[in-house]
Length: 330
Image (tube, rainbow, N blue to C red; front, side):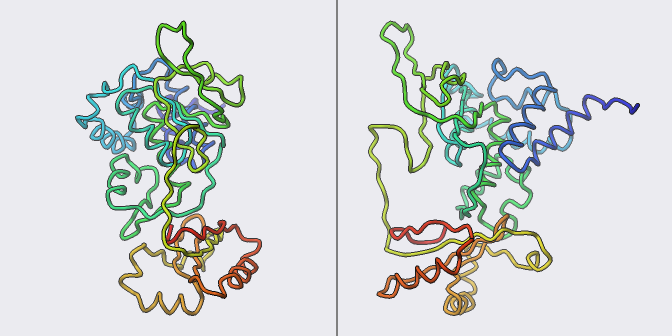
């Protein structure tokens, strides 16, 4: 029989699995295993959670991440985790905005629950990140979870990768994330309640979240917003037509040689990109898990014919629906 694995070594192995988890389900599963091994009670543990994990996990690879979270937690606005103490919040939607909101609330000491009706992150769209966003994500330890994050002149990231980074940060801070749970409606406080707090109607109805009471509810479920009574404001830019085609990166030798470009490369090499666009209709290329091509067409009498031909050309490929009222790159 083999020798039993040292508990501390096993904890380090579980932490490595958590950091490198490639999917939402794998992240939740590995974090649950880590907490179970460290004997953490997520219901009673103080927020933010990571200092407790830090005390029980002695691992040199985690020290850089703890340092970054310590610097963030020291911000005066958080009042050492007491700014929202004794406040319960629920965030509907585990997209980038919902998860980033959950992270901020947790730094302030709130109990945060995130509801997501899916159990996978499948959005391959690539986001261009503004400098202040890159700075913010680096301060949360994004590069510790994704080593290629904004390396060199690269200033973009896929939505699914961004969600994975924020999910891992949120879990370390003590955010409770429930997948395969769909929000249905808000239940107002009963008249005979001593404290004013709200509850949720969710699907499935038997889920434990339906029994929890909250002080704050944040709707972060995107354009399919499920909160009634809120006005929506939509910005419509100049009329443009575009098709986004995603080709899976199979990491072949030829694909590995394709250079990944930043969003500002066009500015420094305009002639090359103009010739490329004139010849192929290709506007931009991002290379992550998928190769992302943006094909655009000016509005003209022949635009309908162009759309028909383009749709035929990329049949069988995962491509985004057309948004004729939007313009610009992702």
